[in-house]
Image 1: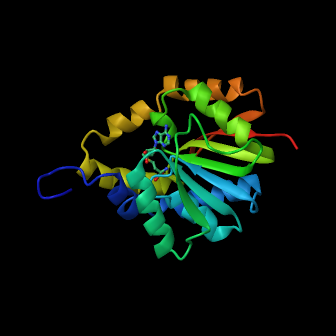
Image 2: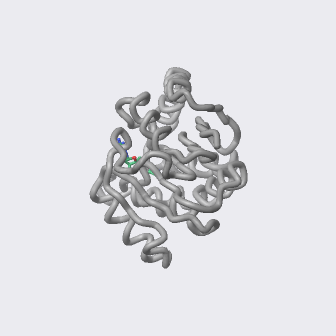
Length: 207
Ligand code: SAM
C-alpha cells in the first residue's frame, strides 16, 4: 500500500508478495509434465515470474508473452537481474493472436492471466495450434500449496479488503466451466487438475 492508500500494483505484488509461489508452481508443472527441454511460453507473464522460475530449473528457452508493453519492459529487467537475459525473452503479444508458428512450443504455462482473456475458445485454439506434438499447456491459476495460499491471502487482504470476493469470482464455477469448455473445443486431449497447486486446464498434444 502506498501513502495514499492505493494498491501497489501487480508488479510490486508479484515481486514482493507472490514471489514464493512461482518456484513451487514451476517445479510442480515440470515434474508432472516431465518436459525440460525445448521452448516454453509463459502467456500473460506479467513480470515473467513463472517463466523465470521454469528457466531456473530446466534447459528451456522461455518466451514471456504479455500484451502490456510495461510488463514486457519489466520482464526484460527482471530476466537480466536473474542473469537469464537471452534465456527468458519478453514478447509483446495478445494470447488471442500469437506470433508463433504451429507445433513450436513444448511447454506452455499461464498463471492468473486466463481470467482476463476476452475469448477463451479463440485463445485456447491458438494455444493448441502452437503446441508441439508431445507438448503440454498448463492454463489456470493458483498459489502452489495450501499454506502459500493462506499466507498470501492474509497479506492481500491487508492491501485489498475485497481480495476474497474477487478471488472467489475468478474461480467461480461458471469461469471454471468456461475454461474447461474452451479446452474441450480445441479437439486435443485435455484434463482438469484441481489440487492444492491451483486450478489448471492441461492440454496435451499427441506425438
Ligand atoms: N502470470 C503472471 C503472474 O502470475 O505473476 C501475471 C498475472 S497478472 C494477474 C495477468 C497478466 O495477464 C497481466 O500482465 C496482463 O497484462 C496479462 N494479460 C491479460 N490479458 C492478456 C492477453 N489477452 N494477452 C496477453 N496478456 C494478457
